[in-house]
Image (cartoon, rainbow, N blue to C red; front, top):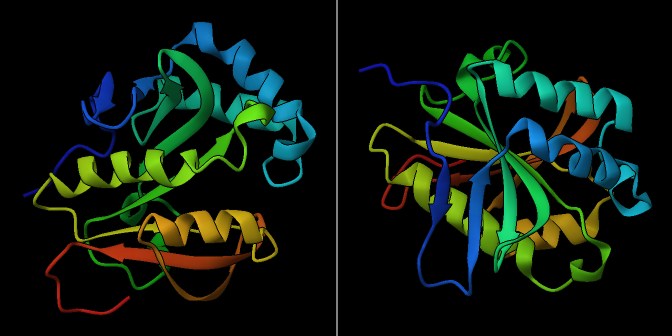
Length: 185
């Protein structure tokens, strides 16, 4: 059974994790995203601000990427996007289970960097995706030099698979399989 490539959710939260929620990004959130993309701690690892904001704005109109603001107690602190990887032109050239989703994120507000929010937001996204019975695997692909992100992703349950070359350069391919799944990687 084929499912939609873009999540229809307007809000994802656990109801139990300290006021954390993923809230669907709207046009009104783009100036905040633009500011974050220009911040040194984000710019070091993400697309340049103008290219990044154009790509994220396109996600609002497209049907393949679900963009979210990461909110802590109602305050936006970062950005997270979920996409159907096996439908993406780049990822279609890789050996992926049919129902693989990808996640990308950054903490935008510098005062909350390093406080453990990344893994907590990732757990929200992972729980939502694995609530869909057809999702087999979730992946993320940080820059291999971004040690803080890699540690955060491991805390959220992702495992290192190996280095890959992406259109954005080298990346460390990391995955999570559906709990109880026997197939590795």
